[in-house]
Image (cartoon, rainbow, N blue to C red; front, side, top):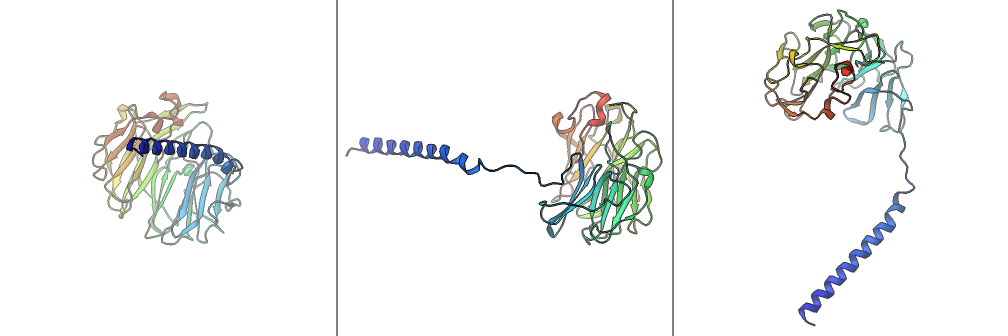
Length: 322
């Protein structure tokens, strides 16, 4: 058989096998999944959920804090959920934190920590020392909205909270608070004024004495989609455990450029790498390679940070959380 005939025969065989394979795949694939259905793994309620946390070393255990539905726990990877906060006087949850050095210790921040037309407020911080079986109120009742709790990964008694404050008016109990005794007492360590609260907190993963915080000047109006933002927003850093703070401004938008809410994150593998989702006239995702000393805009796509609109009337709906 000539070389040409062999080549034609092999080509014909390849095409035939390909067509047969494609035909079989088109025929069999739907039968493999047409009886499968998506199912919700719970909890079975609607609404927003901004607080969620796992437990290091316990891959099947998770907690979620629902904005107006309390705290829930799963021990089986999310297959079933149980409410563990229903006997407390508030169901509005802004954050849930587990102490890494002792996962039986939980902290819950009440109050959604969201600026939006419809929201629910809370009454301070709660603590459990038995994995959520019982709770104790730990103060900061007038904060109303607490979006973040950070627990020192080495010391379960060293806790920071970001308090956004009253959504519809001024109040003094807002900013960043620190406790060195597990919430028995609190110290206000970062504060600007009665109109500016704290919206974000992060530890340096290699050194919990280094803390980053974002302040946000904002208020809701008493009507639908009424909102106000002031000039007090900004990003701050402490390198002495929260006793002293300095602003981080190089490369970031200013108040005159519409600076509002900031969401921050520290890269786990490189503490000098920081990301910030910034709400501003020219907002977007910013990157720092030098632990916050300077920043550059790396993505201005508004789908990342301005999900609703650029209208100042609706800025309360913007999504800049990280």
